[in-house]
Image 1 (cartoon, rainbow, N blue to C red):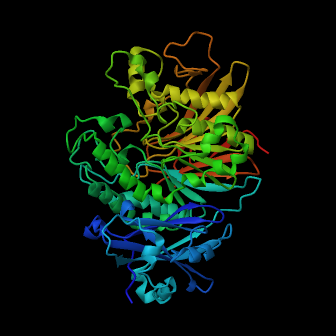
Image 2 (cartoon, rainbow, N blue to C red):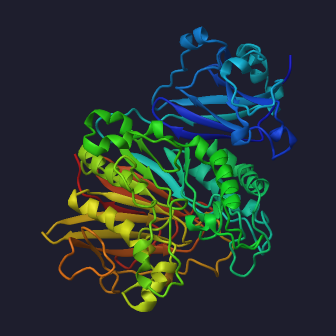
Image 3 (tube, helix red, strand yellow):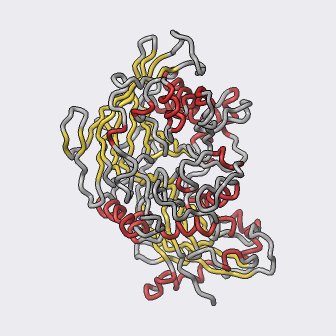
Length: 601
């Protein structure tokens, strides 16, 4: 009998519900010859331990690690079944049932088989199973502690049972792990890994972790040193392997469910989708090409997207009987998208793709009204049967208010919703130009207007934006006032960076607006936003106040207290110490920020 092999990376505990958990591994240490060999098939093996600490023979299953995902793969415990030999066997298979709020321990490995076919490894289960022994034959190897070099282990806790009423939950979030220094990739790998030790050891009670962008830096991201940037798939993959194989990252992600979304450095600094067709590039510096994008997204889908929620996990499928008119098309999606939604403890989350769907006009155009042709969440839909990401987000907001009332609703956006930079305030020539050059929502007034209009017109309370990117942590209260006297409160929390070695570049706290009324940064909301709206036609106005700034390397801990109906936010440094920040009342201390939310039932 052949032997099992230890995966090079993982496991990562991905999308987890009260009855399921998506678990990920990567077979090979890099993009080697085996990874591209046409006749090699890689098959994952997963076993669940029982109360005696051992894997039972009947609790072992096979799953695929396909070449299209570069020999990475997932098994969704609680939903997936074993590979089957024929249709009759498939019909008899049942998933391993998980219980809510219960701890599980699994062991994962992989094996290799050779098939005579040299086609793509999209073989049906039956073709692969012909070459495999029954999964139970691996019971001894999965239970032999002397052989633990042949498997990796994950332990996780399922989420609390989904009920009609919301429960108290807590989660961690942050962004931006740059381990480059002076243009040398991975030079600061150990330093950039330290914060995950604190997250794992001192906050293991968290329901999940959100990593909201720049999980890798495929470029040096330094304005002064650009010695290297990724141009090939192998180089993007190397960046993922260097980060994912670090000790504390592995401990954290194999223990607490982790959700991810990309930002620009998974592709290229300040990436917009307009660059895909840009043929004017300089290899090693500005490779703004379709090839670059394809390599970056192929790596992203293999190492981040694959273990997250998919469209079949979306809330929309439980709501099909309530969809009317053109809303029914929200239940259709023909091709994979990177945005997703999920629910934990009764609180809904919508995780936006604000990077591969952003389109910006040329900022060098003399007509500065071109900012009104910028789109953050995809180009506007041309037909109701083809809803855009923005359409889906606005529908989600409406549906969540209908289904859950004023319960908190979290929008995860790697790009910052507010605050804006001082240089973008007002409507003068340079303010308009700086808006267009911005990497945040201020460069996309059409997208921002549509979201705010939806919140205002449908009285959607307790929307909370979670962001990263700017290497400057802060908290904002957003107030939306309608012309009929409506007053709606929303919030924004930014946590960034996990690790950033260039403290003198980016994130300067003095750049950001503290009071939008005082600093001429109000945002008027319109039914239809034009480049020159007529006076008196606004539906309302958004203003905000911001505080709690720090440039320290950090992560945020967010707790929702269902009984007191408040949000507790606290930022921690790499050593686990609460970071002293200036509070709204002007006092600087390390106590958590308590945000009183609009009451919900």
